[in-house]
Length: 354
Image (cartoon, rainbow, N blue to C red; front, side):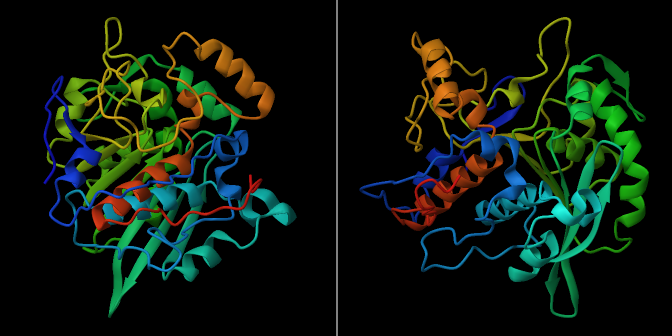
């Protein structure tokens, strides 16, 4: 169903074009896609009060999770995106009495999932969740949190390369964070044949890629993830289904650079949730974005003025808002709506929610 564009050695897919060609697709007359341009959605994604909301409309159920699906699944992609958002939610082990309610475990239980453990290393965090099935677990999902501490940003800037066991070079800062947390993660992971998925947003996506190189999962889903390693490292992962999502103007997946003196590349398949950003080195189409934009493209003549105005108004430029975890969920929600011929996405937050 998906159209393989094969650009620069990476399989890229235009998810909107693919779904439009699906037999069940019916082009809606309107597409009221809410878009969150607040600082809060970027800086405190775990504090959101709308996690796991119905996808297509307030009257339709969430898509079923498919533990047997290792190829691209729009429904699974939506679940993983929401789990990435949930991984930012701080519980008692981090926030003490200031922990948010309902807790991660309560939110997971509300959708039929179960939290197995939450790992909080010195600078990296992740959670392991189980998707129950008759007779036991249907799948396990390890979700890595992205950057939300000063130490994370220092690691992001350490873009020199380090050797990876088994071959290839990877981002030194990412490897340093991964090596600190992996022994605790490995101890927590199930030792069974139940399908295991890795996912993560931003830095968490890079951590999921490194984890896949250490213990191959059933599949990997990342959202706004930076490039983690060189060509040799990426080739080592060629047998693992890796689905990496890029939202329109998001600048993080374009980093670190892939040009001399750097040698960083994406693994797996790239899916564009919001095509039309022709300034992007991974732009796959001139089609307009399904999102109503609140900021111009970074290369437009008015981008500097818009960025300043957005800062004053509490909004942020598109190349940052597109990195917000909630906007990845919204992009997948749009894809699911298109796939089902539904002209609304089911996210109807009250004015001023954020």
